[in-house]
Length: 150
Image 1: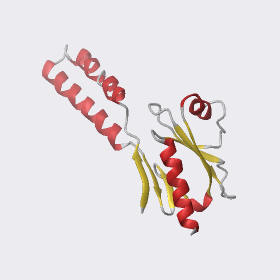
Image 2 (image 1 turned 90 degrees about the horizontal axis):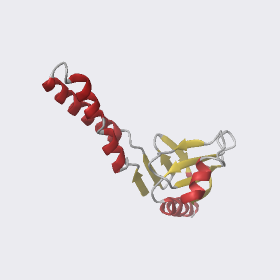
Image 3 (image 1 turned 45 degrees about the horizontal axis):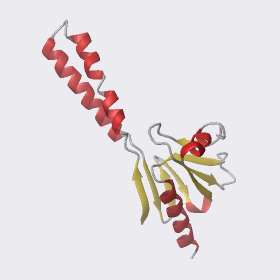
Image 4 (image 1 turned 180 degrees about the horizontal axis):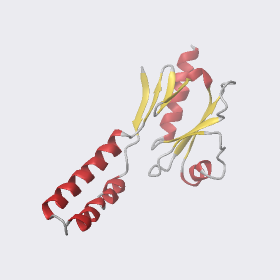
């Protein structure tokens, strides 16, 4: 059963800034062929939007696993989970970051969750995952771990 699910959709400004591909394409193709330039600009923008949507990762907490994108971590290997926002999140993504950590970071989402990995055979000390609701992710992990130990 899924206890928490979040899709890390791109922020609106990503779609707006991606629209700059249209005038750039028109600038290149207008001297050659105006209708082809218009069609190519639209197709390129739609393609970018489709790729942004299709590649948006999902964070999910189930009864047995914590999933972030294509990675999965069994609940039994999860240590402490902590949510960070604002300046603390910036420090976790930067100055405090261990080079061995596994990352699922999206630049348009500031808050992060740090999940300790307690698997002796795994060299990764922790995961850092972008999320818009760090407290909800931490609460879902804790609830799933409590339910698993009962």
